[in-house]
Length: 71
Image 1: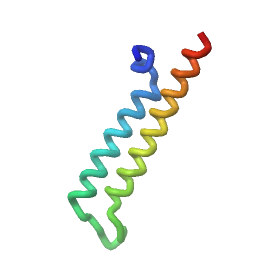
Image 2: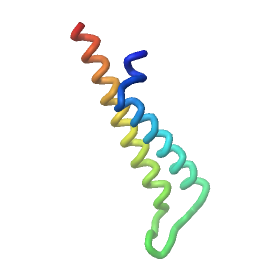
Image 3: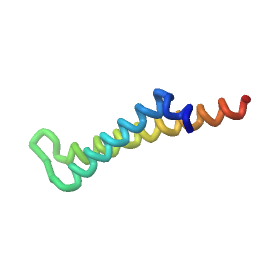
Image 4: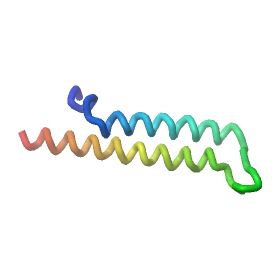
């Protein structure tokens, strides 16, 4: 677990997941549809950002598991 905290993919994934959660919650509680965007842009980009962060976290965990199995 200590090696995981120093992995850049892990920290980037945490930041993107947090940002995605904030955007998603903001999009859920505000219905911001404009003439340029007929859909709630905050909600959808929050979901995309959260999934992007999960991909980074998954890559981080896979890298740590591979490095531990090599030893």
